[in-house]
Image (cartoon, rainbow, N blue to C red):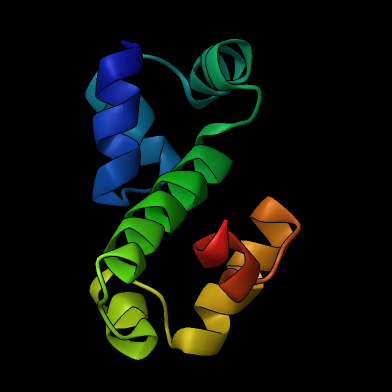
Length: 96
């Protein structure tokens, strides 16, 4: 089930749709996600999206294009998520 959760998080589906696809309730999905990852499925989806964005940026993709290709509204949205999820700036993460 955790592999399915990971794949559904990558697809950007709503939590309820993910739970339905995996055959569990939204609450059960949340509990399992907390136990496995330390946060709920919505946060998992945000973390996975951020990981994809960082991988693109590290390959040299311009930040505005990186943001667009990974589902962020714009580069500022990407930068906000980096600060919220990683506690660092985008530049700090890319350097480290």
